[in-house]
Image (cartoon, rainbow, N blue to C red; front, side, top):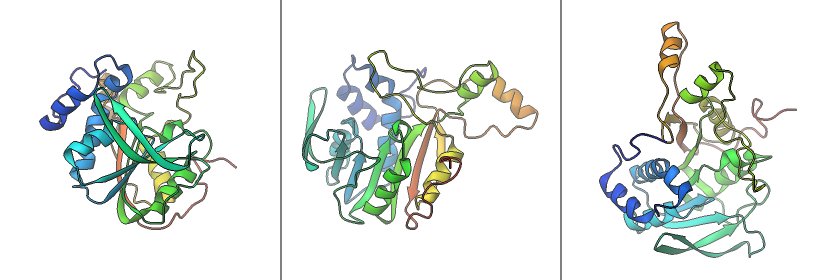
Length: 262
C-alpha cells in the first residue's frame, strides 16, 4: 500500500471519504486513493446532467451525491435474476442511496438505455475483469454516451514500476491474476498497458487520452532509473491507468489486433 495514500487529495473529498469508508473494509481501504482520485477526476469535469457508473461499489455515487447533488447517477449490477431495469440501494458504512439500476452482463447484454442518453460514463476497475469481449461493453458505452462527452475509466497498469521490477527479477508482473481460494471469479483476466488500452479505446470510438498514477503501492524506481540511463523510455509506469476519453465517433473496429486473436 502507498506510504501516504491521503497526500494531495482534496481536503473536502478526503474528510468525507474518511468518514464514509469503514476501517474494517479491506477492499475499500486498499482502493481508497484510487476511489478518491477517480472522484476528483470526475469533479474536475464539473459534471452536470446524467452519469452512468459501470459496476458500482457504491462509493462513487454516494460521494457524488454530496459534491455534485444535481448530477443524476445510474449504476449497473450483475444480478441477472432481477429485472433488467429497476432500482437498487447502495450502502457504504452508515450512508445509503437508492439509484436507478441496469442489471446486465456487460459482455453480452445491451444496456437498457436510449442512444446518447448519458453525459458521462464511469468504468472504474471493471475492464480488467472481463472474460471474453471488452469491445462489447465499450461499444455499448459509446452508444449511450453523447458525442463529445467523456468516458472516465481506470484499470491497473501491468507495466508499472513494480511490474517491470518483478519481470527483471524473473517474477510475473501481474497485479491480481491469482486464483481465489473461495473459487470466486473476481481475479483479473487481462491487465492492460496504456498502449493496449489506448488502442482499444480508439477502436471503440474514443480519443484514447490516458495517463498513469501510483494509487495502490509506492513505486520502485531503482531499476527504472538504470533503464532510463541506458535509453529505455520508462514512461507511463504508475500502477493505475486513468482516462478521460471523449467520444469522437462511432466504433471504428470490431476486434482490434493486439487485444484479440484470430
